[in-house]
Amino acid sequence: MFPSLPDLLAAAGTSPVIQALAIIIGTFILEDAATILTAMEVQTGQIAIPVALVALYVGIVVGDLGLYGLGRLAALWPPARRWVAVPQDGNGQTWFGRNVFRIVFVSRFIPGARLPLYTACGFFGASVGRFALAAVLATLIWTTLLFAVSLQVGHFLIDHLGEWKWLGMGGFVLTIILVGRIVASVRSPSR
Image (cartoon, rainbow, N blue to C red; front, top):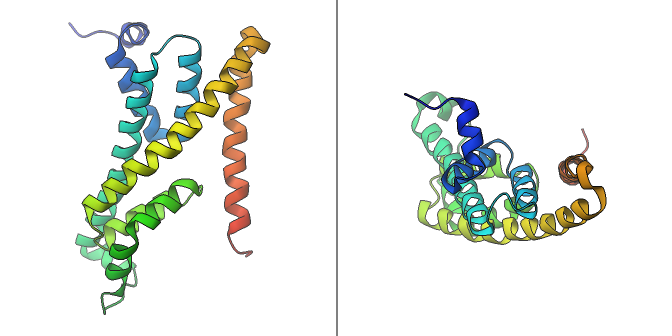
């Protein structure tokens, strides 16, 4: 009747649709790791580049729009409005509306900034159209760059580590995450 999980996982190896769905779900968990691991799968010949990139772009942009939507829903929920000090003069809405492109682009490249800033864009009612356009453009730039670097690293790991390539890729993912954490801690004030 319904395929089992092992059947679905086995089918993912040959089905671009299931591969794309797995990549999209992966972006909801950890975007950068999903991008790096997807590039590695492309490098091993398991996934085609167009399937990989389209799935990454779709998953990341849908996730970004989801964060915006959570902010918008919070703005409409009275208890959330009580938890957040909202300027009564509308300056928050004006500022986020005027700076939505800058906010999205800057936060795409600063680790840890997307969640608070994208939800704030939704909370303060920045234009969803401008937000979506900025999210698409920033995702195209960042994800393509990270994917290209990951392809090169994956090629090196396959050539030099053979069966140990996944350990090397795990180290690469960990390095990207740690560098992001270090950058985030350097830019935040001491407590």
